[in-house]
Image (tube, rainbow, N blue to C red):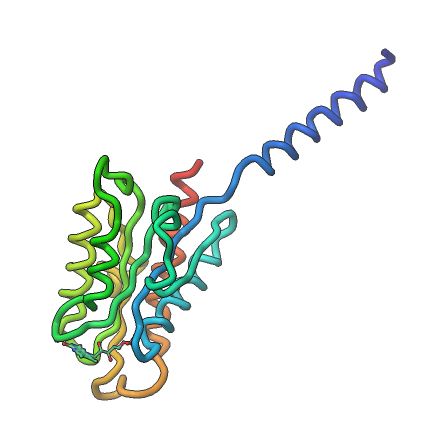
Length: 194
Ligand SMILES: Cc1cc2nc3c(=O)[nH]c(=O)nc-3n(C[C@H](O)[C@H](O)[C@H](O)COP(=O)(O)O)c2cc1C
């Protein structure tokens, strides 16, 4: 084989190998799951997804927990969970969802876990609800990651019904925390997949 023909041959082998490699590797998936009665926690979930989507090479699933299949939990590299505050506690549906996760052999161990929350008022449950979800995730062995600023150290939270924050839309100051949380989780997942 002539030298130039050999070069073309080698070029095609390298090309085919890289095509096969890129098709063979699927991107890690982040599951963003939430419970929302009146849409506030859903708005935060959408902002989290926006942040996740800012980082390349990551897929995400954004769903209310009622639509999440257990395979989606098992296959996710990270689980980001959102709840409203109900009487100082996590929404019961969220706790039931976590209780439904398989535990034997701890199949969720070492996945990334993160949380977001919406509450009507300041300091009447939002931090307690974040901690409640974090505690349950830690029982399953998830590695907890907070938001990207000290104001979202435990996760992203929004006040939806007190003072200046009482209104229809979630205010930007809170949506930014949710976007930052999503971005940080996404970047962490990409780093870990290298
Ligand atoms: C039954 C009930 C209990 C609530 N209890 C609290 C509470 O203890 N603390 C709080 O900050 N907000 C409380 N809220 C307000 C909700 O947490 C808040 O409106 C939240 O943003 C609703 O989220 P969603 O629109 O996703 O359902 C309560 C709301 C309901 C309906």
